[in-house]
Image (tube, rainbow, N blue to C red):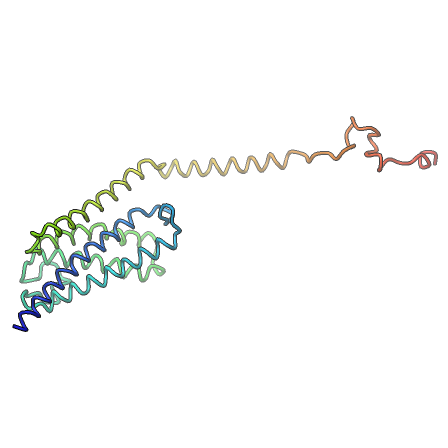
Amino acid sequence: MASTAADIALWHTGRATGIFSIVLLTVVIVTGVFVNRKGELAGQPKSVLTELHRNISLLALAFVLVHVLMAVVDPTVSISPAALVVPFASAYEPAWIGLGAIAFDLFTAVLITSLVRQRMGHRSWLVVHWLTYAAWPVALAHGLGTATDLHSAWELVLTWACAAAVALALGWRLVASRRALPPGQRAAALLSDADRERAAASAARRIPPPSPPGDSPAAPGWPYGPASARPTGGDDRA
């Protein structure tokens, strides 16, 4: 009886951590989508977004690791440790567990490259980081395929809410990208702004400074300047 209760607890823990992993990974994807090219979220400093994205990613990783561990120790299923990283090597539900292994491998690659980001080029890191967009739908398919109890209304609503959130975020990003200037036009616009600034600075240098009072042909006593600077009568007689 105790063994049965423990098995049920392990099974529910694995299911719960899997669901929370999908929710957290969805939040990671959505926050990443809303990041613009300057690394900022609308109305928020860069540091706030960076900390939010990093902390949620680490929390999602913790839930994924617990989910994977539960899959290995759960006696109700037969999943070897190798099947967690080698796709389609599981004797139990090889297709769906294989998708989970692919998602786990992709997320692991993203995590490792993020830890050594300072030692690799930004372009290489960015290409690997984009694997998150491929890993998320694979993980979602893994959850849908292995969930034998996905008949509860709240689980279905939560799953489709995650899918809708990612779809809306990606749709927003595509619309925003189309409205933005293409790279060539953006570079031309920046060059035009720089040219205008240089022209304004050059024009400002060519404009002579304003003359002091009394230092013009129309001023009394010119060309001697102001009355205080004109020679006195004694100097004229000398």
